[in-house]
Image 1 (cartoon, rainbow, N blue to C red):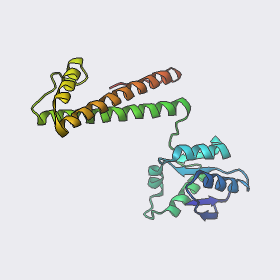
Image 2 (cartoon, rainbow, N blue to C red; image 1 turned 30 degrees about the horizontal axis):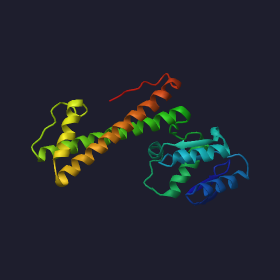
Image 3 (cartoon, one colour; image 1 turned 180 degrees about the horizontal axis):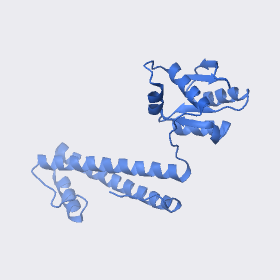
Amino acid sequence: MYCVLDASGKIVREGRFGSKRSELEAFIREVLRNGEVHVSFEASRSSLWVYDVIKDLVGKERTHVANAKEIRAIANSKKKNDSNDAWWLAYLTSEGRLPKSYVPEDDVLELRIATRERSSAVRRRTKIINGLKGHLAQIGEVVPSSSVRTKRAQLFLMEVAVATGGSRGRALRRCLDELEYQNVAIKEWDEVIQSIAPALPDIERIAD
């Protein structure tokens, strides 16, 4: 849903357009026929590509990503629908009071993606390790060290996985394969982070 206001704050156009990139581009180009505009939209999981499209068409200074939570606090309205939300976006933008969300770009965006992917891989690795320990408990075995990543623990796990038959053994072997995959992924993301870090001296890297 969109809402277009003129310089006096009067609604001159409302409606909807599709969610495809081509449809957004067509809409922005059509609005631009009447002159320069400011375009605001709420932050969402699609924000980055939407931001890039609008920024390229209307310019960075006229592209705004709104903080939806703060807008709702300002509006203090029980009338929650797309039309009302679109009007508040347009109105607060015209007033110069739009609460904005930070939009990462360039190296900061690359670092954010890399750190999130690394964190995701660490979480998956933890889940796999817990699964391994659960399977071992079902057959009366315990990892012989505080960490499954030690050489001793790795040798033990491989020996148990090979020696255990049936579905349990298959599950153990699959866990070990997945564990190795996540270890490699974490190492790769560490390398990516290390390569980006020199360009961002103000950002400290915190490892697990």
